[in-house]
Image (tube, rainbow, N blue to C red):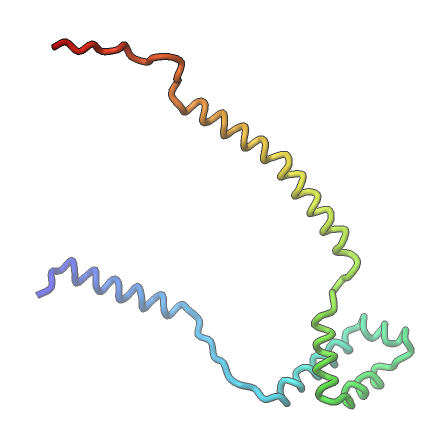
Length: 146
């Protein structure tokens, strides 16, 4: 017969594993066809065209929204995939990130240049205080008599 403490421990472990495994979300994956993937890209491009700032920009170029949507619908599957890839590779907000990145880099370098010597000096001070003093003999020599 199993002792009570071992049985309780076993039950607690089983309940813990069960509880933890129930908290982990399950993932369902399925294959989708090429047509579905391309239709998703086509729909995404049309949704991007429907954004107000995009409509303003298209009108500034002299393109009507209905004409743009008709042209997207007339694209071949390969052209839709290429356009979708180009949209994914485009940098959002290009031109504004350079200055922010430069400021962040200079700030990090300045912090490192200032903090590394401070940490090194503090480490030396801690080691000097924590180590025993070595200024001469700490105890009188013992004499052995036969």
